[in-house]
Image (cartoon, rainbow, N blue to C red):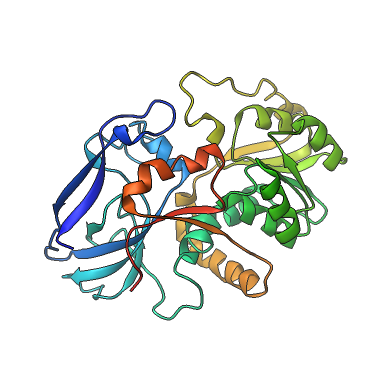
Length: 337
């Protein structure tokens, strides 16, 4: 290819993402300068955090400004290198963004194993930021103990599905919330959750009371809003609440009321703590051996939902919010080497 196709953000979305919030540009494929590498992006990760970045405000990342290439995590292959640490053909993980090719000084790249026993997509679905989020969010903040009751929202999503399985490995009773009967069957019949609740068709409060007769010891929150409020009403003394995301609010066009019962954290002497995976990247060597072992033993499964074509990215990201994605959402930009 001689042209680098790019999606450039040109408007801060209101509600769900629209293609008109971006501009499709084609520029010449860049050449690496001294101490730079040119990476051809193969897979692009779509994550709820992408929607937060689009608001243009500083978060745990600097503000994303209009007329920039949209940010996103990527898996790719080095095409050209003027950097001593990388050679053409190296498979790398980085922040290549919504485009075919990206230049890097190497500081944001990590090499993937040349000889690997898993599909390349596993480095998004299990061994990358998704696996680290589930692992450290549950184990560092949730601190599961045998016999604990763990409730996971967005349990059929990329992070939630791994969190529930790790909870089972740690001998917890695990209850997941998902948005369809098919997803509920998947997390119970294939992933081993003890129970599943379809939050679209069931009374979440009644179902949680039924499936958690001894209360909730850990609530792994991916959604915020009403479901968080319901879960708070059922927590036990010294409960732990890792706050991973608030996906129910990311596309809101008006202020969303927060839980009205946060004072229960006082009476229950509970801990509620937000976190982002970038705080744990330096500890990835702690997690990868466990994740690899559990995967090899068949105790940890993952699923990827691959959308083909960079041109489909702006519409594909809404699968995260309309409930149609199945597992880790990825866009395939180009072919694997």
